[in-house]
Length: 79
Image (cartoon, rainbow, N blue to C red; front, side):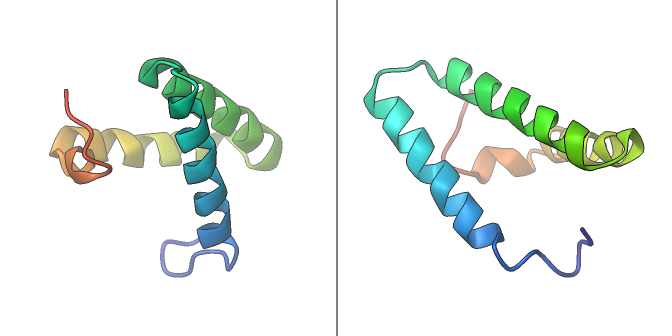
């Protein structure tokens, strides 16, 4: 997947994940448990779908977003 063009079903997938998160929150599942389960599932899916180096690149981009503070504005998460 290139940075320039997202898959056409990305928005739908994101909406489904958002609903799943809302449901888990309504079931009083701890935020860290939700996030850990989603991350673990995502990594397992990536491992079946792309090369290890692609996973490393994705994780490096995520790390850079955390270090830059970019993620702090997403979803109102604080900490």
